[in-house]
Image (cartoon, rainbow, N blue to C red; front, side, top):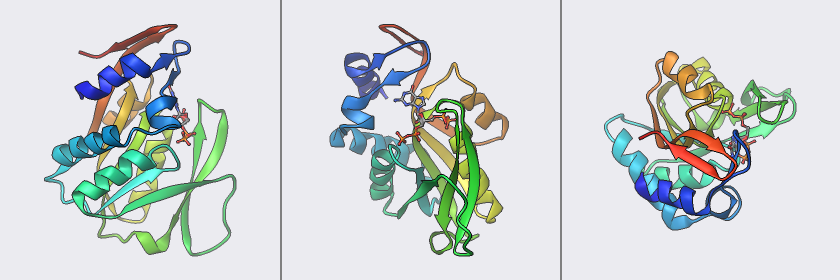
Length: 190
Ligand code: G4P
């Protein structure tokens, strides 16, 4: 997505070889027009997949996910992050490890917002190690629902997440694919 790549080049900031700051339009301040265009792109790519709900992971995935759901005219559901298991039968949960933040957390989903008939599109802001996305897929599949695809705003293709999800057979569509980061350097896969 050319407008996204241009935005990343103009306002993104690579703080080292691993981390890209995009606080001015995605992770802190949010550009609603860009989010709308992101929603359009995801809708166009996944339009024939009979998607019933868009899922995202709290919190920065919410803006692109809600715009995608708006354009598909279906609900968006946020998988909430908890630090521990809730001992309660009303929820589904799975544990995720974040390599970037070196913590474990639990993804929580109310049983009210999914059935085994659902066909889910997972949307998230970053794909790094792929633990969050594969945990979200695991949660959906353990319930007996289907993962129709995964929409990523910014993929750091040099980290393991893309290969992990490809190897599991998911349809992963990333709007910007970064091949290399360094101080002041941002390169995309052509
Ligand atoms: P993974 O899901 O792909 O395995 O990634 P990981 O756990 O390593 O990432 C942890 C958090 O760090 C996620 O945000 C992810 O979006 C974010 N992240 C990873 N790489 C980058 C990066 O290069 N730049 C920025 N800005 N963020 C990155 P989170 O903890 O879920 O926080 P939130 O922002 O969604 O609330």
